[in-house]
Length: 227
Image 1 (tube, rainbow, N blue to C red):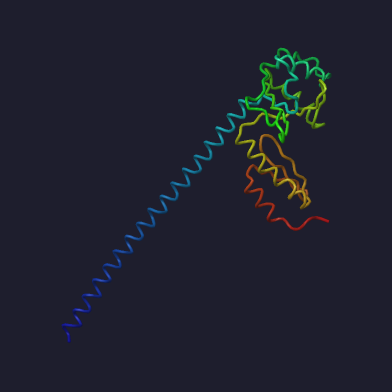
Image 2: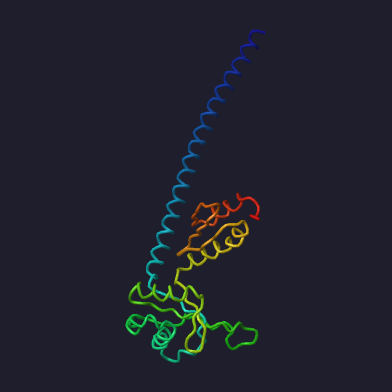
């Protein structure tokens, strides 16, 4: 009987030792997993920061550019630069102090095929004209004149002037723009700022969002529409 008891006690002691060893291994694995998680989060944050810096750099390189939308295909003839000079002179007579022939460094259509311009069922939308200006002040002067009325008229056509942002910024602006109407329905004043930031004024408080996730979370926390 005593022999059996000793055997059982020895077995229990061995099980206890194994359990302690297992717990030690599990603890080490949990520590390693936590370390890996921290490393992964740090790498993701570093990648996010790097992507933001690259996007910001590309947008800064484009800061003197403007996109001109709505000019019918072929209206510029064979000299897009001279046409854009004449277009701006006619559309913005109060900016005659700028030498547009000098200020407009480059002007060309986007190198994409026309979208249904001569085909049945096509939209007939002309390609965007990209212009690059020598001075940011000249670029801003055009943008400020064109922005209040949304569209401008010259050379027998209506055209729009837009900033030239990189693809990722354009996509981000589109996602943020989808939140404008829902926020306005909640009684907020909403503005989409350049390059990609939402300004939300609600209950005499101003909020800024560069992330659509945070803006969506803010929207989800708002009460019903203001009467």
